[in-house]
Length: 146
Image 1 (tube, rainbow, N blue to C red):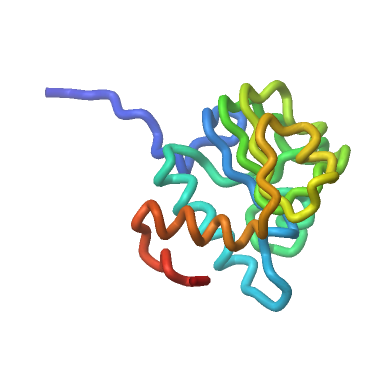
Image 2 (image 1 turned 90 degrees about the vertical axis):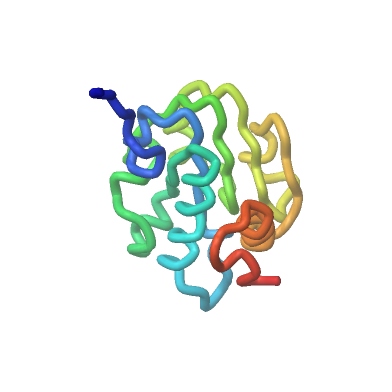
């Protein structure tokens, strides 16, 4: 029997992804390993059938590859679900959001542009919410920040 398999969600090009979990500077606590945070975000995204994306700050810091950058100097995305962790919503980033069906913002600033743009704004610490998702999905390292 021959079957055609679709790509793994974590390796899907962002422009083709139906679900995207993206990280901004607020997803990486001061002094933390940004690459480790992105690995955790990628694992959570894959568990939810999605892909990991990032802001320019994250890719410029070397925490994610530039093909994961969303924005005017990155890729334009049109997912069904866009989950923004610690993303303020600068115009350069929002310029890469085509027409996502649903936007969820996780940020400590209830007045930031990303939260204003979101269908659901979760006013909370982005790293803590990511750790909780990791834990609830039963992923290795899910108790990392507990």
